[in-house]
Length: 165
Ligand SMILES: [Cu+2]
Image (cartoon, rainbow, N blue to C red; front, side):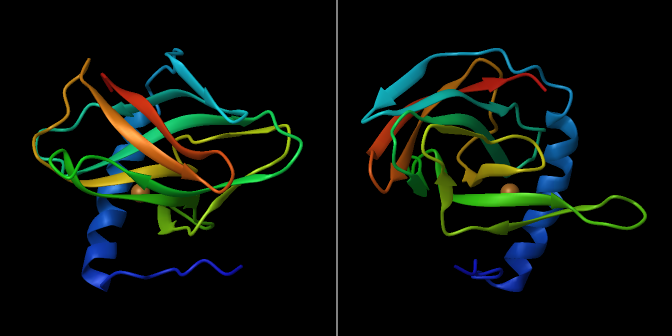
């Protein structure tokens, strides 16, 4: 499977790259205390959180831990939030580019494989759910619903907590 690198216009990708670099930096200092978890069809989603928005930020990354307790592989292939909350949600993967400066980039991915009896942790610089077009800046302590669509486990609704960065 070959992820499509640029499924959106280049100008949008460029803005996303810039915004996410800033978000990665701010997210690094946050501690990841655990919160509620949801288990459905053997898949456990826990510790869903996102950093508080900088004042004019229009993009944000959601991090989450996904555990597959089943003996067969599962795949996360979709993410969505209420349209009244943010205009779009997509699954992306970040990477540190080699060379001087250690810049970061990211790309949309079509799915994330959750291994049988395995865990995948979305974290700063790696997999994340990219939200764009917030109706209002995110404030620490705020919560919102995120729907994650899995090949086998179906759609799992989790509560995301906004944390101070
Ligand atoms: Cu991103």
